[in-house]
Amino acid sequence: MAKKCQICGKGPVTGNNVSHAHNKTRRRWLPNLKKVRMMTDSGGVTKARVCTRCIRSGAVVKPA
Image 1 (cartoon, rainbow, N blue to C red):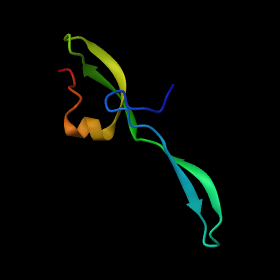
Image 2: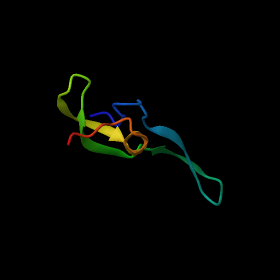
Image 3: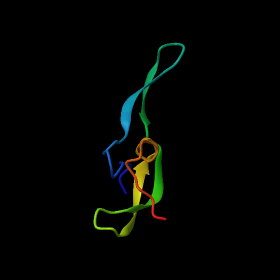
Image 4: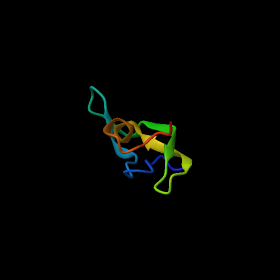
């Protein structure tokens, strides 16, 4: 199961942990995904893994 938003496509970002001694180790920042029930274009209801930015911005229409 991919850690990717099904609306905007936001996924993991990579970078480094940097210690006080400036040692670097690789790390990942994961998107804040939530499982939500949402309305589809055809009027049906489906479950999707969506980032919280899409939920807050109104890109996800929740069923009544």
